[in-house]
Image 1 (spheres, rainbow over the protein chains, first blue to last red):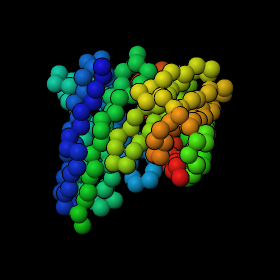
Image 2 (spheres, rainbow over the protein chains, first blue to last red; image 1 turned 90 degrees about the vertical axis):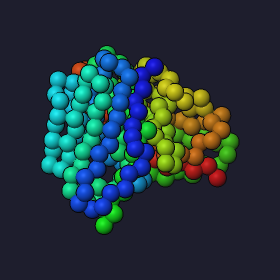
Image 3 (cartoon, rainbow over the protein chains, first blue to last red; image 1 turned 60 degrees about the vertical axis):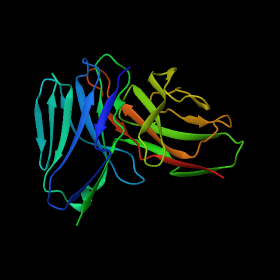
Image 4 (tube, rainbow over the protein chains, first blue to last red; image 1 turned 120 degrees about the horizontal axis):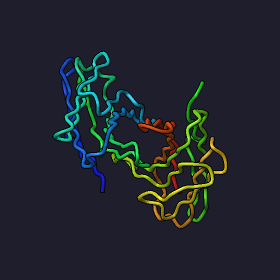
Length: 112
Length: 113
């Protein structure tokens, strides 16, 4: 069935450095790829998303890239800050499929 | 102010009791979902509903039940048949048509005493 893999499972970076989280998906029909940030004890928040007709999207310090041929997509956070520490989930979905498929999550720690 | 609300935020239950978690949305979304999250783990789909009066089992439906009598509401009942119900429960809803932008509620933490 549909599957989304996510790496790494944990990531520690120094404040100010960049962080990269990578995901791969199995369903070639997937056309929407959101990223969520989950702080401790809270629900996941949608932080950025990308659609299949776009290769890259940027929003301030956050960017996502998509390689449809390789079925890869990545989240890039530049100039990391302690408040970026959280669990990040990637996901994939298709127009015709009821569910959103989530990756297992990456726990990001930004060390001051 | 549109969004998804879940209540209560914390819930304690004795073994053998059923308990119902509330989820309400005013986003006019057709689809609603329930996920379970265990500590340090990802999201596992319990049940989802694409339309009023219809719902489907997710990956871990055993021991849970749902209803969808209104578009805005999708309550989840954790029954006594659920062997390990202590977890963080998340409700979500999804935009209708086209790509499915999914939004989450703040969650309910259920603890079985």
